[in-house]
Length: 453
Ligand code: TYD
Ligand code: MG
Image (cartoon, rainbow, N blue to C red; front, top):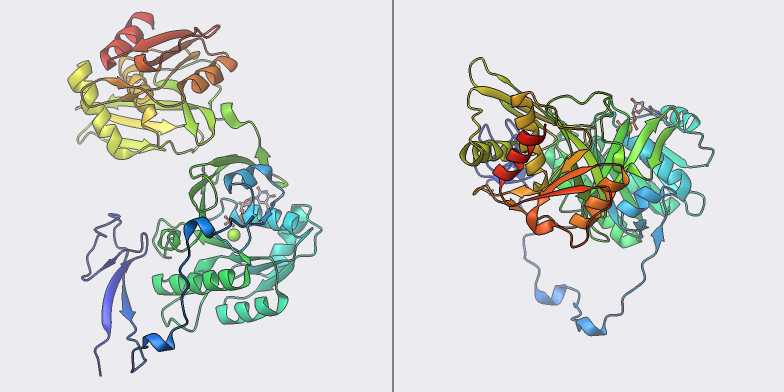
C-alpha cells in the first residue's frame, strides 16, 4: 500500500510546507501549521483522453459579454463595495472578528434580497430562535428560509430542492463534510467545504455568501486560506467595541478592490454612513501634541483621518507599536527621521495609532506619521486645521501621491487652513482658504513645523 503523504498547512494563510515548524515561513504566524494527510487518488487507472469530455476553444473577440444580473442588497454602500451588487453565481467571503457584525449585516442584506428572490440562511452557530430574535431586533419581517445545520452534504441536498437565489453559510468554519475526516474548523474541513460550495454556486448559478471568522488565537482556520477560491472577499475593520465598522473589498472579480463602505452599529443593526469623510477625526476640543490629520484616499473617495503618535522615554528595549498602519514602515520612517531630520528616537518608545480602527495602507501617510512623531517628541501642538500627505523616500525626499487635488478640496471643504504637501503635487491654481506648503524634502516640512508651532 502506498504511504499516505503528509503536509503541514498554515491555518492563517493556507501555504503548505514539507516540514513542521513553529512559525509559518510565508505569513510568519506562530503555531499555525497543522498536519494534513493528502489522500492518494483511489482510481487505479488514470483517465485517458477519450474518457474526458471535449473542451471548446474560443476566440476572445467572438465571445459576447453577458450582462450578468446583479442583486441589490438594499444597502447602497455595500452594493458599491461589491461593484454594483451581488453577481449571480458568485461566491463572496465575508471575514471579520467575532462579534463585529457579520451575521447582522448579512441578515439585513438578505432580507432586502428576499423581497424579489428566494434566500436561504444556514447557520451552524445559532439556532433558528436566535436568528429570529436578531431579525425582530432589526425589524425584519421578511419570510427568510432558515436552517440550523452544520453537515454540508445535507445543506447542499436541501439547497438543490429549495433552489434559492442566495445561500448564506454562517460560518464556514462550523461546517463539516464527509470528504474530510479532520475536526471542524481545521484547514482541510474549511477548504473542502468551501470548494464544494463554490462548485455548487457555479453549477446552479446561486450566490453563496460565506461568513468566516478571523481568529487571532488560531483555534480555527482563517478565511485567508479561502481567498483564492472565491470571487470576492470583504473584510470588516474597526473595533467591535467602537461605533463604526468599515467593510473593505480586498478581492473582487466583478469590481474594484480596496473599495470601502462605512457602517455605524446602532440599536437597529448596521446603518450606512453615506458621507464618511470626517468621521475618523477625534473631535477633541483642545488639540494635543502628537496628533495630526491626513487625507487618505480609500478607493474612490477621500477620507480625513486623524493619526496620533506618542513618543516617550523608554525604560529598556525601545518599543515601536503601530495600530492601523504597517509596523515595518514605522522602523523605516524613524530611520529616515534620524538620517534626514536629525531626530533621534533610539531611546524612546514610539506608538502610532489611527483613530477609529480603520487601516491605512497608503504610503501617503508617511509625512503625517513623521510630523506627529515629531510633535509628540517636542511636545508641540500641531494646529487642528493643518493637514498633510506625502510619501517619504529613503533619501528624505517627499514624493507625490495620486489624486492630490481631490484630497485638497476635501480638506478645504472641512475647513482646514494649512496643507503640507509634496512639491510635485502643487496645484496650478490656488485653493481658496487653504494655505499650501509644498515641500520637496522632509527637512522642509520639519522646519515649517518648528517655525509655526
Ligand atoms: P453579530 O452580527 O452577531 O456579529 P458576528 O456575526 O460578526 O459575530 O453582531 C454582534 C454584535 O452586534 C453584538 O455585540 C450585538 C451588536 N448588535 C447591535 O449593537 N445592534 C443590533 O441591532 C444587532 C443585531 C447587534
Ligand atoms: Mg455571527
